Length: 443
Ligand SMILES: Cc1ncc(COP(=O)(O)O)c(C=O)c1O
Picture 1 (spheres, rainbow, N blue to C red):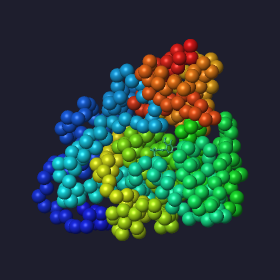
Picture 2 (tube, rainbow, N blue to C red):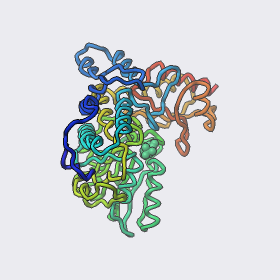
Picture 3 (spheres, rainbow, N blue to C red):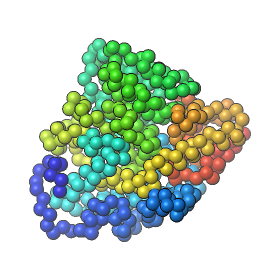
Picture 4 (tube, protein in one colour):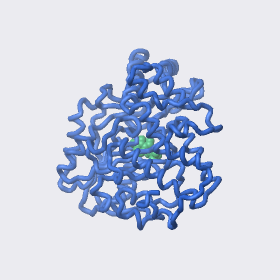
């Protein structure tokens, strides 16, 4: 047992006779071991764990790779899910981890049985840290992006003379959270707008740097906007902020699990993400990155069981949130294993390719289509938002679902339109079908 984190349970556990030893070994061994466990709740146990090696060795081509990846997801049949920006299905190995561990906890919720989840949690933390290019002590396993954003928003010391710069294309509630705090404490929130159709990275960077003043204490922006699909040059903005001693909060809800993210390279102070979006991990799980030097100065919003031991242990200080669902925390490692089994570079390039196909096919098949999301790879990612004069946006989402079996979102505001966000479980044929459905709706 990892003694550093044993504070979460205030007793010592002797590794003596343990029931379900096979189960424990399986869990400690990650997804590979999991796949060996009998599981009735999942209908498809096709392991993909050697896919990366086989694909790298040229033993399988990309077509076969994505077909096998797709077989690991339950979203099949006629439904085309294009809403990864909101909520993703988990692949079978992740479901299995959650199911098995939930059953284990329900069959024996005793302290001695739960003790092993301390180790599983640390395995998850290590796996996430490596996956995101961060230190292990810089990662808190929390519940979602909203929680992470609020921990930072409420944790930074801010006075009446201070300013915080936020992007008007952030997730609306992320920005409201700043307003709510500013109303109470009296600092200024400065909302900035980038051009609706940005032409270059420099233009975007300049909008931020022009807004920085000697009073600016923090800047908060989405790495990729969920309302427009625009990607911000996070590294450059963070570097400009650091030069001015401005703290940076990067909302990674739309990059965690799709983009290859290297947090030390980006150089942000805080980064947040949700497991249940592109990462395809357990639901209601999230991550919060806090640059090593900053966890001490960030005030906690929630103090729960384990606080005394966690307070000087880096980012973990922010995950004492009361009783947690240990199965989902432990399953985070299995989600990382799943991404690694494919290769995160391939996950990113495949998703970008499908999003690019949405754009090119819409342009080819639907004259008059307005695509709000930039075409350039540099300024966009996996989200595509578009509209057409003949499409009534008020019922478009339900029509697409009911009449064409397409799951997507419809956005309002200045980028009002249909939002398609494809992922690795989609095929080129599905993109074709979805675009044809839109063309049909536009009449
Ligand atoms: C950029 C961004 N931030 C935050 C959130 C909130 O995510 P969650 O509800 O998982 O906390 C979303 C949700 O879509 C988002 O797109």
